[in-house]
Image: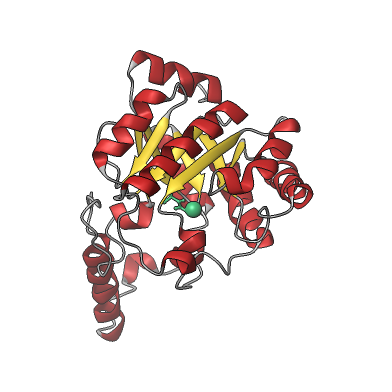
Length: 265
Ligand code: KIV
Ligand code: NA
């Protein structure tokens, strides 16, 4: 498989080939999903939930994101690696935004950054792009703004919010974003946005009328059995699998069945 580039993603949209994207936060898992042939690996700030055990994505720091991204990049041969800029590292100050993006590109070797929002963060996006750093947008449910909304329910069901989302999507394309994530919005709206834009639109909980799909890897592998939103398809039940494996190990240790003769020096 050839290396995935932002240019290649644009071609995939033109040719109707859907784009596959998953999150990863460490070397071992990144190696697995890159080897399986994934198109894009997102070092998501969902690491705050999945890796660090926080309730939201807000607490994770730029240093922590850089640690995760550095590990992921070392494992990757072909996927495009996109790194989330965390809350507080790009909003309201375009110079700070560029500093954050440059640290990510220099220190991790990642290929692009992702930021949440449209018109509100326009100057930050413009300044990052001015340095030649590819930017992926993220609209709809934006977890970094969770306290503005109060819940993780479906976004843009109302006309007004839908109109703003469309305007923001068009703005992001006009500014020069190379792709856009739409999270948890009505399928019909997502399809409309994907049709309006020439850049690829990648959905999570946004239906099949978009140009690709993204899921949090730990969710799709069924590692956490307490998280089962409607949009999530589980491709494995690692919660059960791992619990069973660890249970068997404990039994073997207790029974002095492990290690056996062949497992000793
Ligand atoms: O951080 C993340 O995992 C994300 C995806 C859900 C798009 O932003
Ligand atoms: Na994110």
